[in-house]
Length: 113
Length: 115
Image 1 (tube, each protein chain N blue to C red):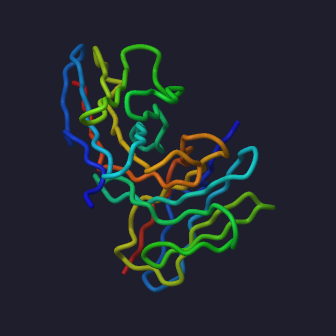
Image 2: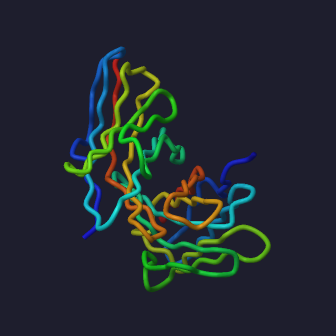
């Protein structure tokens, strides 16, 4: 079955420190991978996506993600966290030749001052 | 360029009533997707529509749920005879063309509460 796993329900990090939010996937064929962020009572905002090419993808608000095919991972990273980064982060995969996104269960990021 | 619009933002219904959720895609987008988010869960795909066509409804419950995207006007997700288990946030997304590489842009969602 095609799926996305976000193994951490919550990640806590101090402001200024680097952050990583983990994501692994299981799909057949080449995956298209996405990260979205959700603020309270808001919709999802697109952060970045991997389609092909360079394994390191840069996105909005200083976020980046690294695609690792051998580990089937697509971890979200930021070199220096801000308190305003505190939100719910979703990893999603769009299997090749389909139209739907498959989402992970989300990771709540809490950045402390 | 306005984003994806959804209304109402909050909807309260009693069991057995009908819920109608509306979604206007971003300007220039002709593909609409509906997702449901249950409390403390990720989003689950429901249906994918183009103008006047349902392309993929594999995530729609077999009964009581229907969706349309008419030639004119917004896409509508309709839930008949709502039950408490229908309480969730319903998100609409749109994309400009069909293709696995296209980004789906999400609206703010409609939060449905069934009493």
